[in-house]
Length: 108
Image (cartoon, rainbow, N blue to C red; front, side, top):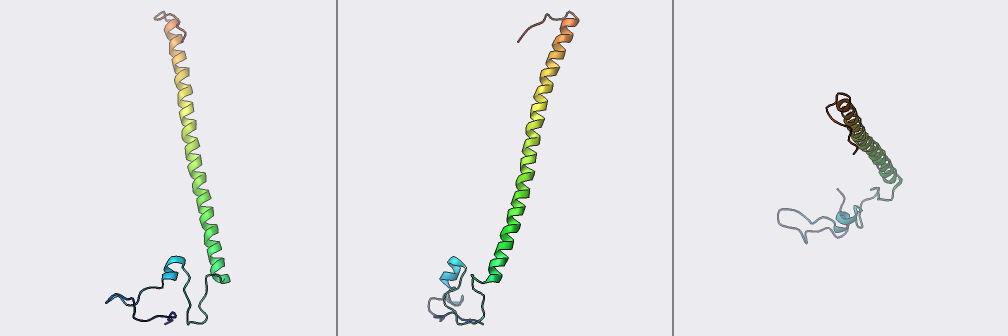
């Protein structure tokens, strides 16, 4: 088990053990350690891992945005087509009413 410099029983809460390293809690990097070979946040392995995760997240976000955009565009197109069809149907009904002499042509 690795111990941080300054680890002791001071600052602990009874039954909880020693307090966690505040630097690690804030930044994810440990304060001075006595362990050797522990990867630091600047190590190539950690950086490569973070880069790959970041890349995967970007790709997932791109795909999700594409799907959302397609859905939004589809809904907008549907609404436009609905409105066009309504106008065409109104015009056809108006023509039919005039043809059968039920109503005279009214321009709107």
